View 1: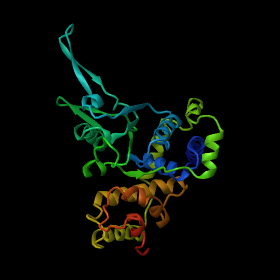
View 2: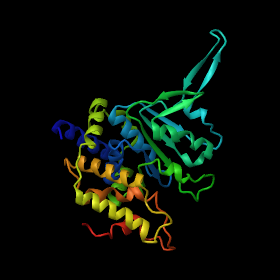
View 3: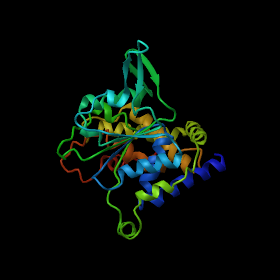
Length: 305
C-alpha cells in the first residue's frame, strides 16, 4: 500500500476521533464500510452522535454531503427528484433530489413509510435511479449512512429484510465511557468544531483506496474460515435463517478493507473477527429467548482452520 495514502487514511481516523470521542472502533468500522463501497446503518438512541459521525466523515473526505430527514409523510420523489413541466419550453425538466450527492445521511430512516424507504433500494444496490423510464447514474463515490432509533420507539417502521441486506454494516455507538463523557462536558461543543475541520483525503485518493481493497489477497485457509462461519449460521439451528452468499461476500470484502487500514495486503482471521459483528448482526435473527450473547459472538466459536 502506498505510504502517503495510508498516512492520509490514518490522519482521517485520527481527526474523526478528535470530534467523536471514545469511539475509535466505530469510526474504523465506518471507514471500512466506505472503503468497501458499502452502506452503513447506525441504530442507537438519540443524542449519542450518529448524525455527527456522518457529518465528520463527509467533511474529512471533502465530499458532497446531503442530509435527508425521514418523516412519516415523505414521498419517494422527495428523495429521488421529480420532473416538472416547463410551460415556456414545453418540456419536462428533471429536478434532482438530495440522493445526488457523495455522502447521504438518511436520518431516522425508520420513521418513513415502507414506500419511502424502498426509494433507496435501487440507489443503494445499483448506484443509479430510474425515473419515468430514464436511468440516471449517481455520483462516485456514493455512501449512504442511515440512522434509526430502536424499533420499540413510537412512530417507527421496521426496515424489511430486503433493505437491511443492502447495508454492508450495522453498528451502534452507545454511551461514551466516563473519560470521554467528562471531556465532552468540559470542552466546547463538538458540533461547533465541525466547521474547522479540513479535508484529510481527496476524492481521487479515496477512489484509489477503494480500488486497492479488491487487490488485498485472502488465502485458501481464510476462505475455509469464512465458509465455516457461513455454514455454522445455517446449520446450528440458533438462527431463523443462515447467512446468504451475499453476506459471505460482504464479510470477505469488509475484512479486506479492515486489513488495508492495518496496512496489510492480505487478510488474517483477526480481520474477519473485527468486522463480523457489524456485518452479520442485522442479517441474523436469534432463535433463542436469551439474547444476551450476540449472534456474531456465537459464530466466533467456530474453530479457525
